[in-house]
Length: 358
Ligand code: NDP
Ligand code: GDR
Image (spheres, rainbow, N blue to C red):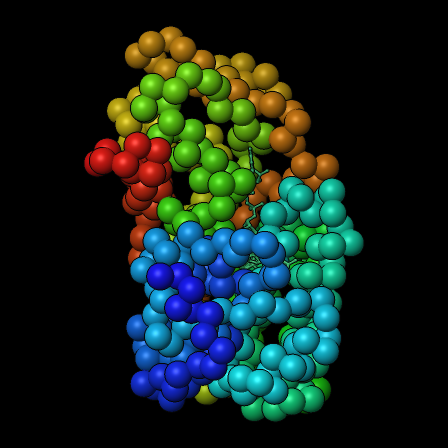
């Protein structure tokens, strides 16, 4: 049962290495926990204190109850708690994945976003410096930091141009990571990851919102999928491969900054078309910008439409990455295409919506 994870003390794992993952209940946290457990790590996963911890992803990956996984509550915004966490567990590696990660929400909650994403990272870096500067630190940086730069593809030397409170908060954490590396010799790496998706993606993000709606409609639910900017272009990779890249960055001889991306770009409209095609529906798009709709060619029914309420105050039009450095120095490469990811997500949602479906 799930409560097995709430042991008071960890059991020493096979590799003898201990990793702390903040945000273990999120998409990447769950994949990374599974990956590290498989490598023989002792994993301490932190989550925020709530009345009921959100463990569905860890359960889907079958790692809840693993003897080498310990879940602990931790407040990222409290500097003393960061110090206590490291003093207690003395990890070899610390992966800071916890964040207010929804760009759209960061416009409504800029201060919380700054505190959790920005100061939270600084709290951990300070704790590393004070408790044990040999702890290796991974910072979950984001392609959103490139924002409106305009130049494509984006790589480690591309200038930043953040376009949301989320992106600004991540840029603060990114520069702090580099600063702690340079000023104190801490092994602190920053992974600038482009969008990565999976069946474990949160349902507010556009790919999962789409796969979820497609699955519901395939099972007969009526309704229209309402979306924001269909012209936004993103570089979508598979989350399970990106967490491997995080680990590879932490094993390199020297700490650095790395972009992980596929190098391909699609529009949100492309993803909508792809997702519906998994259930055999072909779409035709009609109308312009704020009033665009997607029509099921077979039935003539409108299945998706643009709702300007989902537009962001400042949009990022195009993000597409160049992961050459990661390929050359780490041997990391994205292997799964966006078409495969999209199919995987729709099929998982079909199963979840009506268990027993394919
Ligand atoms: P998720 O949103 O799936 O997970 C975020 C995690 O952070 C969850 O465990 C969540 O907990 C936790 N969290 C949220 N708010 C707080 C808070 N106030 N205090 C403590 N913990 C909190 O994100 P992903 O797994 O997709 O992303 C992981 C990291 O990588 C994030 O930092 C994200 O910004 C960054 N990133 C993600 C990319 C992507 O495409 N997925 C690309 C680039 C960077 P709870 O479960 O309780 O909500
Ligand atoms: P993003 O992901 O903002 O890139 O951040 P999201 O899936 O939210 O948006 C991608 C693009 O789709 C457009 N869009 C919509 N987005 C959402 N969520 N809902 C809609 O209805 C909708 N319609 C169109 C958005 O405007 C945007 O252009 C993700 C997060 O994981 C971040 O934490 C991470 O840092 C970046 O990816 C890289």
